[in-house]
Length: 117
Image (cartoon, rainbow, N blue to C red; front, side, top):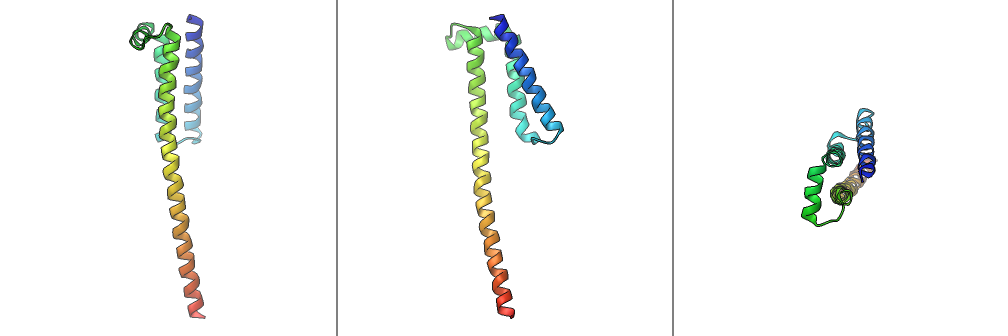
């Protein structure tokens, strides 16, 4: 069980490093990286704080602490994925509206050109 928590610690540190590296290289925006940083730090903290993890395990009613850690992490990351799905949906709607406005402007410009000639 300790070995699994150590692997989780290593994976949390890896995720933390990847997010920070991506931030530094401007591959990810700050407002989107916060969720990933909170998730990685939360997994790191829970994998190192055995007492807190055992309390969560007892509260949920699970037989194993690492299982509780993965349940909490999976729930958190599902919420993050849902949040990003909502953001992507809004961006798609905004892109459609912008494309429609550009088409209308192009139509007006073309009609002005046709009217002048």
